[in-house]
Image (cartoon, rainbow, N blue to C red; front, side, top):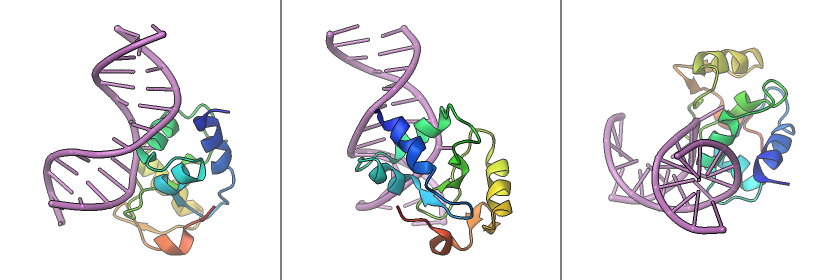
Length: 99
DNA sequence: CGGCTGGCGTCGT
DNA sequence: TACGACGCCAGCC
């Protein structure tokens, strides 16, 4: 199974209302420094909606990018109970999901 | 706090 | 088959 498949599968383990970082996700699939790669994979996400790529954020606390628009991503997270202000996640550590 | 560089698989040339 | 560019970052300076 290739990396991207693993990534999508791992991402399915992230429950609603929780978030994870690109770096953690990378490690979860066996990559030490593949944050950037994760981004590319998410960008080519072949299973939109099925794969909750909007629950993946940057380790800095910012929401990061989104293929369909950061605004949309922000709104989706907001609907799941994650408060965001100025593209910044308020309760980052609190809602952070560990694999 | 802003900017630059590092590290990695996939895809296109 | 081989090589370089790319992408929803992370971390150090």
